[in-house]
Image (cartoon, rainbow, N blue to C red; front, side, top):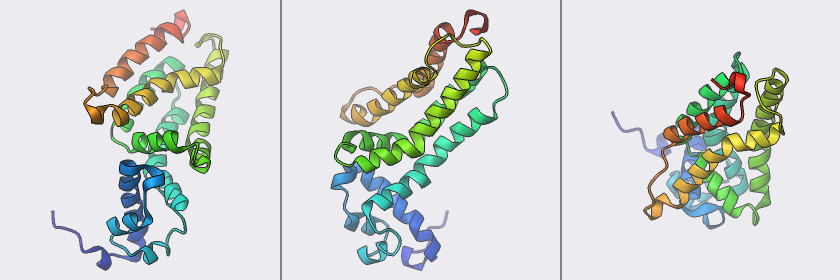
Length: 212
């Protein structure tokens, strides 16, 4: 593969993507508070002044990172849920491996850990993450579970809490990967986790007639 042209020779419309890529790396390595616009600009091959032509603040860059690097992965999961025509147990059998595959190859973990660790000091980050990603996904899953309960497929219980229970093991695994694996802890295999979690949900969440 031939190397691409130097950044100063690339088209102007390429630069926002290059800034997002650089910011993702800096946020992942240093967190939000310690990330410097100078370093983001340098890694993107721009001057700090040129950076301001595209994004006015570090918060604006964070929003762009979420929209460009994180939201498409979440949207892919949501589209699977919305388009699935079968019973809820079959949806789980499709959804959990899909989540494992996407989360294994996306920057969701690194940025999510940053939001969790720095959200108290930067509440706008947590609010944006919640409003753009978490709340819509929980609402969608809660609606699917409520419909499944009405069909007699899912046990009685709070659909929103069931939604949180479904995604919680993946959140823990991703935080584990970002926090403990770098200091030598063994990784948690997401695909194996998904299969084991599915078996637990089939035994405990679905009604006996729909658990197989």
